[in-house]
Amino acid sequence: MDRVLIEGLAVETVIGVYAWERSIRQRLVLDLELATDIRPAAADDDLAHTLDYAAISACIGDFAAHSAFQLVETFAERLAALLREEFAIAWLRLSVRKPGAVAEASTVGVRIERGQLT
Image (cartoon, rainbow, N blue to C red):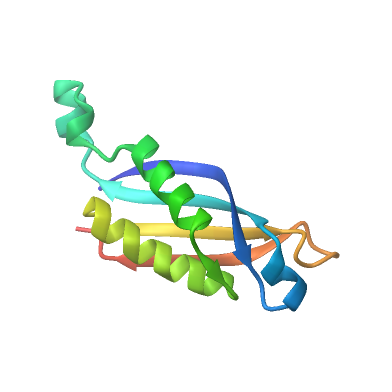
């Protein structure tokens, strides 16, 4: 199975457990691997036969803009479910990082895999 990649996608959202975090927007950085067979798109040179990373990125931006979660884990889980449903993605790997959340670390976050590779 082939993979469409979206790496280093930055979004702004309300995320965090502390009261001060609930009143601001913070930056999250996402990496995605999305399983698909790219051969039909490559054969026809047709975007309609593959995963449209621009449309997926726009969907992620819209999701982030309209969500407000306490946990990065919740953000990741809900986003993965939305993407799998909206774009018929059989399998994905999603990393969500929250830079600056821990002063001693460059970033913290989660990585999840959902679905099955065929």
